[in-house]
Image (cartoon, rainbow, N blue to C red):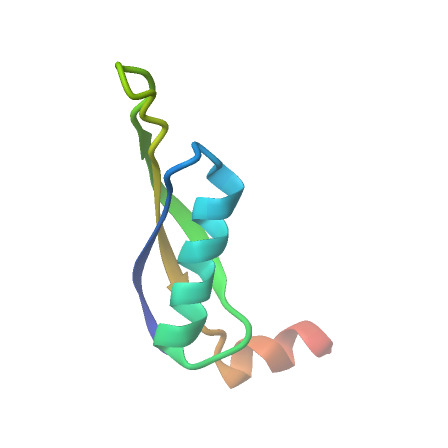
Length: 74
C-alpha cells in the first residue's frame, strides 16, 4: 500500500479548493484514482492591508490495498 503526506493551498481562503488540490496531489503522487485521506492540518492567514486570505491544507493519504477492497465487497 502506498501512502504519504500532501498539501494544497488557496489564495482565496477557500478550504474546499485547498483540499481538492491536496487530494489531486495525492492521486498523482500515489498514481491512483482513489485515495483514502485524513486531515492532518488546516492553517490560514486572513486580513492585513492587502487582505491576505491564504489557506493551507495538509492531508495524509493512502491508496487502498487489494485485500482491503475485497473485504468490503464480501
